[in-house]
Image 1 (cartoon, rainbow, N blue to C red):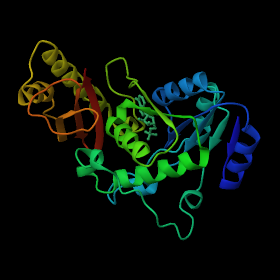
Image 2: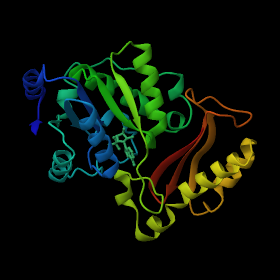
Image 3: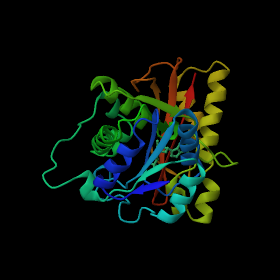
Length: 276
Ligand code: AMP
């Protein structure tokens, strides 16, 4: 496994790998867990060469968010990447992604407006900009994204369509703990009491999905069912939205999704369930 720590090293490594066949690419912010491993393993399975980037992207963090304390266990990440069949890892410095004079941003699109886009101003502008730059650097055949961050995947899907980026975006199912909590690099922030409460988010989503399966289509009823048991959380949003545009819905009808962001103490957790 090659580890490229600068743009020059990345370009050299990509030149050497050229001609081997299709490239699969998994962009991440590191602090890798089994959710990331699932993306990496799939990328390795479906492509001749599988590449990973680890970059805690400052432009997608708000001023009061966790940029400086985001976990960065690089050696452990490299072990996980190697075990998942990765051939190339890009660990850029901030200046490799945002060199002096950098001033072009992808502003986003209508899919980026609600939900996390409304609560985290500038977040998807940062995400779109970094992902487009990484896609241009790697020029992969396929890039892999987790449905854990469903809005992110849908925003990027709109972006590659609108800007004619020649890549297939592959959505991958959310990997969960045995008790249903979606794996996240931010779960390490949870105290043991918060960790014990955290699975309630997904339990609520599952109950609402079951109610939908039994014929309940009134959005407010589904949201009420989903929010039961979340008294200890500060709900940032809990909404029913259409797929793939994340538009508002007067009635639940397939395909749609329930999406939630909720704070437990200082930690913001997100999750979603698709009704399809
Ligand atoms: P992150 O490093 O958290 O920005 O995530 C990098 C990629 O891994 C994104 O496409 C995420 O959606 C995906 N990912 C994160 N957590 C999970 C999970 N529990 N299951 C599946 N994919 C995930």
